Length: 451
Ligand SMILES: Nc1ncnc2c1ncn2[C@@H]1O[C@H](COP(=O)(O)OP(=O)(O)OP(=O)(O)O)[C@@H](O)[C@H]1O
Ligand SMILES: [Mg+2]
Image (tube, rainbow, N blue to C red; front, side, top):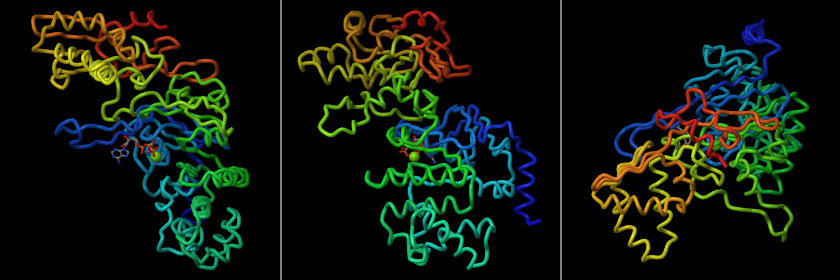
């Protein structure tokens, strides 16, 4: 028995048939970072921050979200290219994080990654036969040059690079974008993996070739009994490919379930916003195409309190996690829209927003006429952009200091809504166990306020 066969046997003994192909429970991947925008201290980027899902053999599971939502980090964590910070990660019942390097090498051939950047997997200095055949040599699946050549040729044929003889001795850069991506797929499949993580496999391609490459992926999936985890920011791609989907926002799933359900009737406001932003294919028709909600995706070092989507959410209310910086941002946003005289009057009243002492639970404005500011805030607050005013628990003026305190607000737990999981207080305020709460006060009171 070869060493590879022995290792396979060890894994097979450890795995069980009742297990999903992949089990992911509360997975977290945090990156320590030094310095940064907010002073000299160091912080932690919570790129993946508590994600749970299973993947069954033969399915296409989509990880969907905007740039920076943690898709690539999650994908790489799933195959143990990045060690998880916490959580459970089992492949065929095997705890990947607990594997020795040797055992992991044996498993690695079953877990392939199509990297987001095609140049990351294709060495431009290697001929196609050497580049695509490289994993065969690494895993000692073929060592003789003639065997490698034969296997690579067969795989090239399979991915539509035909006749293979005309490609084998060329270099990747001589190929078109679509051909290059076929090459990347050939390389990913050459070890006959079981699970393939495809990270934005068609994002770099022209629209005209995207569909053909996706169709090829589906054909190959059938032929080789593959399971895909498809990473994409593009909902049209997800819709075409996926059986089930998890929508990621700042390292967490906001909604997860059957792709068809999510597309036909999205429940999380973020999923709705993403779907509304899809351009309609019919040319000339007035689209329901909209911009994604206002604001950038916030910084993953300091994610918003409560529901991470609340600052951009059209349906947010008092329980969603309003905090100090939301008030500052709302006043700033107001000042970009009101007449200049109003802005100047208000600036004279409130002073320099940059000098406010801003925390999650409260903001303190000092050195001003606190009573007049309080009056202004009570009158104007309900008109401020977003629903920040509904998240305020108390406004207290004391000579020249105005303190605005915010209601405690739990991070939303996943709850079942019409056949899928949704993390949104709109369907009933439910606190995520062990979640990151604002303050310690009784937050149940805010639950009754939902619209
Ligand atoms: N090695 C790293 N060190 C520090 N931060 C990182 C590292 N890798 C990723 N991040 C941060 O983690 C977050 C998630 O990044 P990731 O690349 O996983 O997102 P993504 O969804 O794949 O985005 P894109 O659609 O742009 O590819 C981002 O804030 C990113 O800056
Ligand atoms: Mg990415």
